[in-house]
Image (cartoon, rainbow, N blue to C red):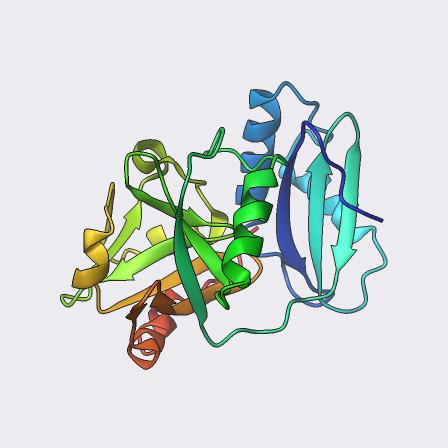
Length: 230
């Protein structure tokens, strides 16, 4: 069954029969917030009722679950994506409508994704019309500078989605600077990685013609291991 389109919001996460869903409360709260923004009905009154619906489904192997809200509630399951050791990104420039909400209007994302994949990149890195780095088609991005500090675009200032995996890293207690960053940061960074709730953390090996040390970034990733939360 294809995903619904039109006015709607959604959230996506991994469901395993023998493991708790990581950060389900955060998924619930963001879905609730996005539904209210677009004046859509939220079918669950709390995260416990949402969890009960998920647990009622006959899931026997790990899958990706997408919950979409339009004029009705949709639940789609798909196989886990193949793991990626790293990703290559190409910059594109445009402003996404309502960037702080996970909504279904993705025609620009699909267009630019096809463009960069035709050039043998995995994903794009979106620059706003003001020239600030924001996010990729599906992920938030972090840059690592020589002092090992992390830098990531601020959703309110730069215009990007407040991702669930992104929030998990911010809650680790590791020094992270949020703000507006131009492409000048690419020449300063010694590494970069992208995050989302399905793939977790994936190192970036290339942005346009600049290469990054994937092994160096991988050595940091153990610091960001997510812990199960309700």
